[in-house]
Length: 317
Image (cartoon, rainbow, N blue to C red; front, side, top):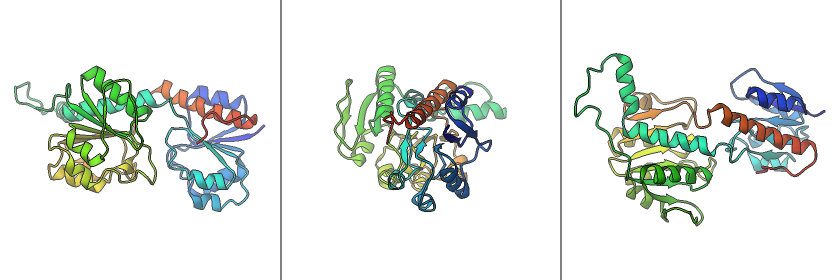
């Protein structure tokens, strides 16, 4: 029986399924693996089921010239915390869990759009603090979302799901930026330049994968191209947005607000962002629904089972 390490606790059905096939170890700690833990995982286990924050860098693979592990069955669609090329060079396969996260992550994007443009977080804090004195016509006036123009950066599964919700649910005009040409089955215009896209929209939602190619994709140039009433939403990876530039743009009034589920140095969130009333901050809730996290775990375990049986990996990266 192969030894499987699950680096963070997962829903009970996922653990039970894994235990039926593997000799399973589940870490009690909710923090990411340390450097020593990462090295040990490659030497003591046949399969590792890691997740966000477990940083399998090239240095980790270099430290284990003859790894026992043959598969990193990542829990999550994003795998920028794993150097996939270094893993391949070390003879270790990598899989992820695409599809399972799409709908839940798109829901969070729409929630952040609504919360930031309608000042919901600010209003909720007012009620909780006991400072709300009652309704009046000019209180907490925000931006009406219906009928506005949405810009989507990255028209993959999640980007498409966001655009569909915005178009069919809110009558929004859809424009998008994508590295390759994309044909969609609903009205949407592809814009060749990210700066040009930013200048045309009322909301800019980030839905690209993380990694070196997209790090700081959203910087001062893009933020300054946005209209003063525009809102930025990030449900992708924190370092896609250059956080210092976002803070500066918000402080200077270049944009009206932001809705963030991820952060450049997560879980650290700058005081400047936490102190701004026009910023909605969530603790990386993108896939935080029980059925979604269960589906992700089942997919990761299915990848591990395929590996153990010598079959083609369903979700190889």
